[in-house]
Image (cartoon, rainbow, N blue to C red; front, side, top):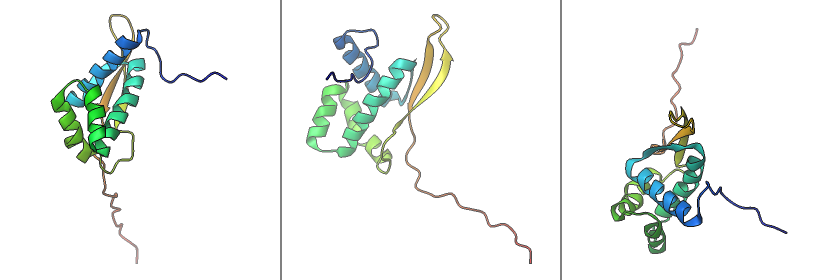
Length: 133
């Protein structure tokens, strides 16, 4: 029985696709917000969430795995420092994809991929209403 494929090919060779995703993950972790096409954004979200999960794991093997994927050394430091603290309480879903209309030149659907702010631990406080006595 054949196995299902995971992810889309994005019309590129394997080496080009891997290089593109590595560059996009590095840019997302560096600037925390990038704009790209919808299909690339969906693939980027999967890979970026895995990188942040490696950062949360925090051991040496996870750091080496992240360093093998992310292009810049100081971004790996940011991943295992600042971003780990930000997402400590969050159990997944570290990125958000927002559809941003179509590109002017070729009408390709665009999306904005951004990292979420830190987990909010505070519960909303209900205001007491005046009671009739």
